[in-house]
Image (cartoon, rainbow, N blue to C red; front, side, top):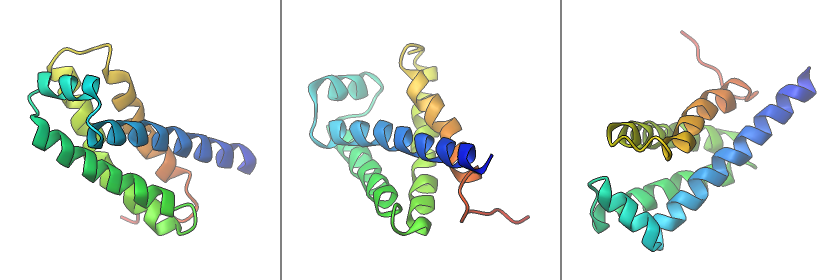
Length: 123
């Protein structure tokens, strides 16, 4: 059972990193399709780049987290508002074909944190 939990954790972690990695780089390097999409959602070039840089910061924390687990958890918690914001924005603009990745990342946040051996919430 522990092996399955570990596999789920790292597969979820890898997909989380993939989604935020390419999305942040597309924003920072101003890929045309991403810039047009963000503009249609109401974000100008400046805001798109700021969002991309902040997402890239979270991705860097997650990558560092491979060696230092506290940074991984901090990066995932840092990126959670971006995942929720992306999901909310896509749903508000009725872009139902684009909301899947943001919904999956919202769910994977809980999965990654719940399966992490070094993360605990004490109430």
